[in-house]
Length: 315
Ligand code: FO1
Image 1 (cartoon, helix red, strand yellow):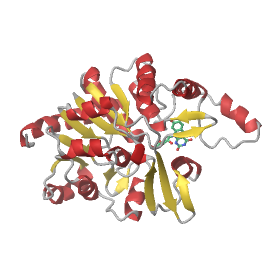
Image 2 (image 1 turned 60 degrees about the vertical axis):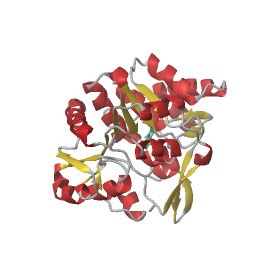
Image 3 (image 1 turned 90 degrees about the vertical axis):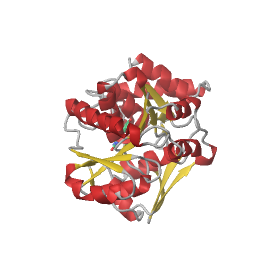
Image 4 (image 1 turned 180 degrees about the vertical axis):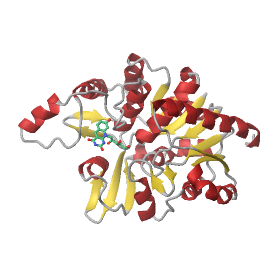
């Protein structure tokens, strides 16, 4: 079994690539839920939905989130009432939020709700929320503390981030399927997701962090930073403002002790020796997924790297 930790668009695209080149039934994706929030009385789970829509082959190809060809009549109606429709929810996307909220309101755990939704979208891989309890990323800025989607979407990531906390994390229980997926994986992959706000919340749950620290199978991260820049989103600026180096080496330092290998882009080939000096093996390749078919090329290279590390990991 392959287990992937993911959040954001980069994570979803990577998980889709892995599902294209290996048995999708044998893949589990543990997804960040700290971006989740309530909006118009509905529970929105952006990272889970982004994984679902990418694996179902219905994601908007440009944004990476939302559904391809979706319409915005509902938001137009909300705007007609004088409300600012700042978070762009498509009409068909709303059906996910409506059903999810209805089922959550019946006290069905989020893990089960997502099982129903992904199964009905024809997705064979397990999509596993990191926890069934609510967790909310809070962003500290010079303007005060912002809810994550206020920072990310409403204010377009314009604020300098001076701190990040995960409200509710102390009550967030690891789920049984996600714990099993991590402890039984033959290969663990940390997707090219933001290490602070996408992978960070998952690793803030001690059971998952301990599972990585005590791993018996190869564990590989893919650097989301290429040439010092994030391909998408604010990870580079966030790393720098929080005192990390915005580079593949900075990513290696953050994950040191939890990973055996790091996949870096050819632009960062000169960083490989410093990363290897940390005890982390490197694969240097074209780490940009240029289009949907290219996701499979990249995933196949990462899986082959995983195979090559099998002997290197302590039993
Ligand atoms: N991201 C945006 O930048 N603007 C949006 O209006 C937006 C809407 C949206 C709706 C549904 C959904 O599942 C995701 C959406 N996202 C949007 C993406 C999302 O906010 C971020 O990608 C993640 O939270 C960061 O990981």
